[in-house]
Amino acid sequence: MAIITFKPKQVTKRLSNVLGERPRFVIMNRFGLGDNASRMTLESIGGTYGITRERVRQIENFGLNAIRKSDMFNKEQAVFEELVKIVTELGGIVSEEDLLGHISKDPKTQNHVHFLLVLGDEFKKEKENKEFKHRWSVDKDIADIVHISLQEMSKKLTKNDIVSEGEMIANFVNQLKDISEQYKNEEIIKRWLGLSKVIGRNPLGEWGIAESSNINARGVRDYAFLVIRRHGSPMHFTEVAEAITDLFGKNAHTATCHNELIKDKRFVLVGRGLYALKEWGYQTGVVKDVIKKVLQQHQPLSKEKIVEQVLKERYVKENTIAVNLQDTNIFKKDKQGKYSLV
View 1 (tube, rainbow, N blue to C red):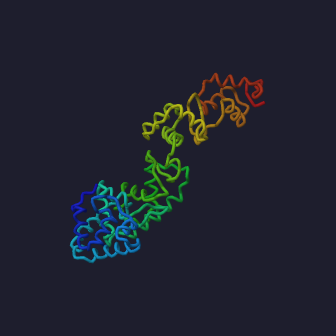
View 2 (tube, helix red, strand yellow):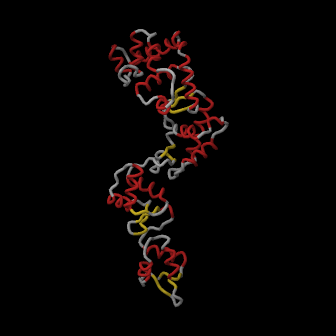
View 3 (cartoon, one colour):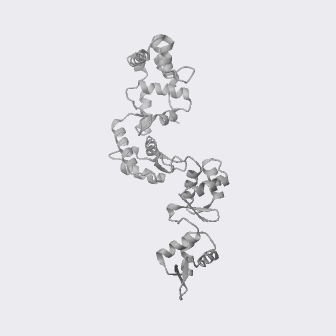
C-alpha cells in the first residue's frame, strides 16, 4: 500500500465544513463519509428532505463546486498533488479498485479518498463500460494510448487462446506506441492489462479472453482442462481431482471428476483412468479404433510399427494391441506379416 502523509478523513472533514447543513448532509451521505461506509442513493436522500432526486443531484453539484471555490480547497492543494503523484506512479491511468486498494484496505478511508479524487481538477474518471472497468487518470495521452492498445490486444485473441503472463506482457509492450520508458515495467503493464474487461487472467496467471472457460473457469471440467494442460502430459483422474483442490482450492471428488472428464470432448481417455487433451492430437475411441486410424493412414504395417504408433495414442500394454489385431473381421495379415484393413 502507498504511504500517504495526510489523513483522508480529516481532509474531507475540513473541506465539507465549508458547506451549509443540507449540502453537507447530501455530500456526506452520497460519498459515504459518515460513520457508515454505505452510500445513500439520490432517491433515499430526496425522501429525507421531501425533494426530487434531480434536486438532490443539483445540491450535490452545488456542494462540490462550493468546496472547489473555497479557501480551504486551496489550502489542501498539497493533498491533491500527492494523489497525482500516486496515480502517476501507478501508471498514469489505473482502475478505481486498484487505486483505492493501493492507498488503503479500509472501505471508509477509501470513500474519503474517492471523494478527494472527485474534487480534484487533475483527476479524470471514466466510468465502467463493456470494455473497461471504472478508472482514473491524470494524463490523457497515456490513457488514450492504453485504451487503444488494449482494444488492439483483445482483437488478436480468440476464445481458445491461453497466453502465459510473460508472453502477454511482452506482447502488450510491443503493442504500446510512444510510451515513456518509465511506464514499461511489469507491475504497471499488468495494472494496465487489468483495466480491460475483455481480457482476463485465470488463477494460474494465464491470460486470454475474459469470458472464455480457459480464463473464467466455472466447473470441474474447466478446472480439469487447465490442470492437465499445465501438467503437459496425460494424468489419472485421481491426480486431476487432487490438483484441482491444490491449485484452485475447489473440492473435486474423484468419481465426479472422472464422470465429467468422460462427458467432455476436450479430453481423451488414453489408458486406465488416464486422460489427455484432444488438442494434443490424441485420437478418440478404443484401442481398435486407433489401430484402424493408423492403418488408414499407413497400411500395410508390421506389428511392430502398429504397436509403436498406437502407443503414441494410448497408454496400454503391447499385448492388448496384439489381441485387437486378431480380429479378422477388421484386420488382415499378408504373407510378409504386415497388417491392413479388410
